[in-house]
Image (cartoon, rainbow, N blue to C red; front, side, top):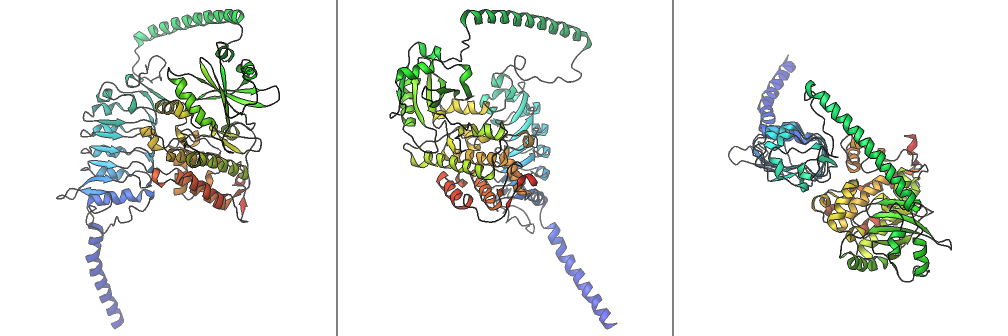
Length: 589
């Protein structure tokens, strides 16, 4: 009995002790703190900024990134930009109903914007830009009457811009650029005051803010089911039939006139270079790189037409030029932009023509015509990396992919660090990496983005659909640096590893681009799933090192990205020197 009596006493003592401790564990943290703990639980990765968030504290007011009202201890500000936070934004954030400032930009958040944010009716600033958020913009954001700053740019948001946002009369900053938004921008509220800069990079938006008529060539807007009335349905059908008949008559007339011009004038459809040259042209050669007379080159250029086109892009149409001695060159035709084009362009071309490197496409010279510039480059028989990865049947094995990446890295490193003057490429992408017959890479089109002007090249790049390569800060400011090139190179590496374009539909539908997809796979400890299943003999250690390099390059913070010199060093020491460890065939996964 004595032993049993002792156990009862022990249990009573433990019970009293737990009764004293348990309330402190469960009730110590105020409700705002509990909401932030749930916010933290939804985050799968970070740079360690949340490690000091201790649930045993009485309130969260001393936590990193958190500010509170000094009297009520209610959270008024949560600011955690640039901390590599990965995960979804917990709807518990909506319980912070005294929140005035929320900044989670430049992280790796994915998933939907929680509608519960509409409960934070005191919110004045909401910064969620440069993440991987997807889904629709919640209507509930229109319930934030105090909101002054709203930035949702550089995400993967889709759908329409909700009309409820037009009720936010205090908005001074509004930005939804570089998403996948569609339809008409609300114009009957406060959003009417914002211009094109707030909406750039959404290819299917229309409205007066972007100077795009929604009813004339703009995106079609789906009407509500009950918007059509039976009394005017027949009238619309009659108008539609009349318009169709009129369009057919117009097409028939255009076809007749086109046939007449074809017979009268021949096949010159504007893609022949003869018209560029016939009014007078001159050849400029760089350092004797073209061993032909100007007359011979011009004679050959005059024969080029649409049959010789081998590519086209934001910088112009590319033709294949074959000389009589068997040498082949690529000719890029760039239309003159303005009155001051000639002098500036020629000065810059002299600089570009002086840049020679094994991993750069050689600019041999140019033809100066009254209407255009015809840049003459070396022709590379392997075509572009974009074609090889996405359009051709042959597959690059692991070794070939590493060779391509290394060549591109060395070419870009030379532009950044070793040539004089140094060059920021501004448009690194797979279509600007050309391959020779041995699949060695050459960087092309360097310097051309600058020649066409920062603003023009920036907008052209977005419209052309290559914004998946662009660094978040470049999309925001339009200012290019070496670190924006490094980001684009990191995207290129992921494209080569995966065999998928940066905005492939398979993960865009899930709210990711290729960087967000990598971050998601990393958070699930499934990074190797990014490898192209058709790629053979992948070396595991070099893959790990290469993914590590790519992850550094696509960091949301430019300061955290390595230089291209450092990238080359890592590639040479850790990626291109595989150990005799196990290879695996990704196609068998």
